[in-house]
Amino acid sequence: MEESSRESSSSPQICEPGPSSSHSTIRGSGSNRSSSTPPSPSPLNDIEPIPEIMSLMKAATPSTPHHHLDTDPKVVDLVTRMFLSQGIPMSTITEPSFIELIKHLNPSIILPTETAMAKKLEKECKHPKPLVNFTKCIGPLTVTVDVGREKDEKSLAFSIHYFDEIYERKNVVYLKKLLLSEVDPESIFISIRRAVNSYSYSNVKFGSLVCPDEEVYQMLSSSNICKRYFVCFNYFMTKFVTDILEIEILMNALESMREFIRFMKNNAQVYGNYRRQQLTKNGDLNLPRLDDRTWYSTTAFLTKFLVLHDDINEFCDRIQRPAPISNEIFIQLYYFQRLLDECLKLSRELSQPNNSVSQVVPAVASLRNFIYGEENQFQSVIRDSFTRSFREVLRGNKYDLAVLMDPRYAYRTEIFSEEKWETLESKACEEFVVLDETASRWFYKDISIMEDQEKYDAIRADFDIYRGRLQKERPEVTASPNYFWGSCYESVMHWLPILAQEYIAPPASVIDISAHFNKGKGNSIDWRRTNESIDDDSQSNSEERIDGHDDYGTENGDSGGETRQCSVSVERTEGGVSSGSSEKRKRNIEEII
Image (cartoon, rainbow, N blue to C red; front, side):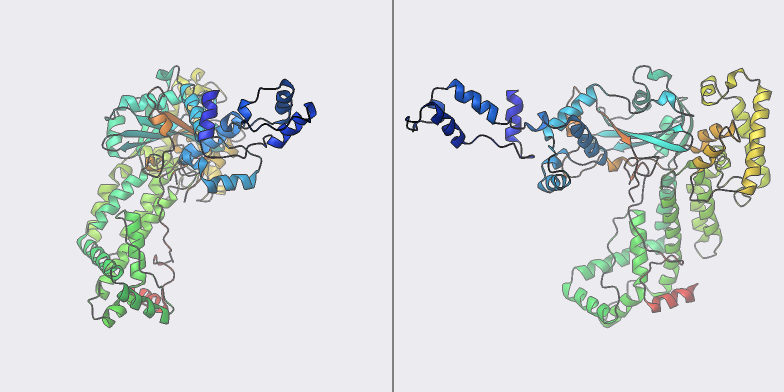
């Protein structure tokens, strides 16, 4: 107790202590005993204690709060979990602005100290409680994995997706700081399986696993712990766009633009003259912000530079400086800008809440239609890069079967031919027949006691109902396919809704580990990283949100933070160039089209 009191007194003041007894109260109590006794000049601790006075002092003086000893345990738990899940340093609890906000919301609340939060976190790590009872989930579990590959430290972030009701996919995000500098399949799988069942994890298996890149895919995909392995869609897209950005004319033009921006921002007088020019034209006063060489920031940089092309060239003529790009180059760059903007749009769509691997093939088909729909001098290079980058998607039945199970895209002839849809349907029926015995608990009837032909006929009947229903009504592209299957389950179809979950449950994108293990100010999970006696697993219940997060963040009903998001916002018009351009720019764009 003494140690706790010292910790509280040495830490920053978080809550206002209760009023303590004043000296006048003590003197008043003493005067009742002997009014003729003059007050002693000696210090208070030199006076012999008087039992009557001491009892009055104890009755009159409220106990002084000791921060984490007096804080509601629920407050300690909620604040600790919130800080951890959002990557907020624990030291934030002592920030005056944070304390002011909380006191405004609830003046009587007693916030925990940083030490109390650390002790709570230690206790949770030593005796972790499962966040979800995965044994009661409907359908197979799905995992997305991302691996941090710092030079001296390796970290792991994974998200387990599950259904506790067929209408909604949910997930839980887990963070782990790996002790070894080398990542191997066994350590990854043990971490994931222990999150499901820490006592008998050797029996845990998954329906699908989504890897961050081909390197991790090659490392894990040989294991039979998961049925299907996928690669994050944004890995394919980044691979394709990286090839595009290395096309010589685009690469040189971008470097010329960057050199111009550096020149302007290093010359205050010149930049001031440019802003005065823009002010007289009621134009945009700000030049494009230099990109950080990520492809989505480069897209934003290119977009704004092309919007300001006329204004920049006019200013260059005025100061007698060569323009960064000519009008001829502008025409060629405009096509690249629209292509990059299309890639950015698709990447965002597949990083939205409830994104599914079933969207990958339609997204790739949309990009292919864009590329093949327009002829120019770069078509051969772009088409070769497209085929090379998305080869894994274009040749895999596992992606195609997911499209079949998504009512937004199933049986659309612009995606696959009728013959291909029939082939996929037969393939799905065959996979249903050979489902292992562990899948029997997902269905209302034990399929392990059914004959193979009985299974085949049952799933065929459901497919007939599925096709007929889609001819009458089809969900919007922005809707979740899980609601469609939830409305059909048991009342319309008995087998297909559960089987569909196995194919459409995997997200198209993985959790971004950089959203949780970063180099920001302070440490949100230092207490667990540095204590060797604590298991370095951390769990955060993903009542998930979308960070325009997860990247990252956490999920509620599987909304977005789990996914890898592009953090740049690009204004777009129908033509793909940012709004806010001058009427002259709009006329030029129309002429180009």
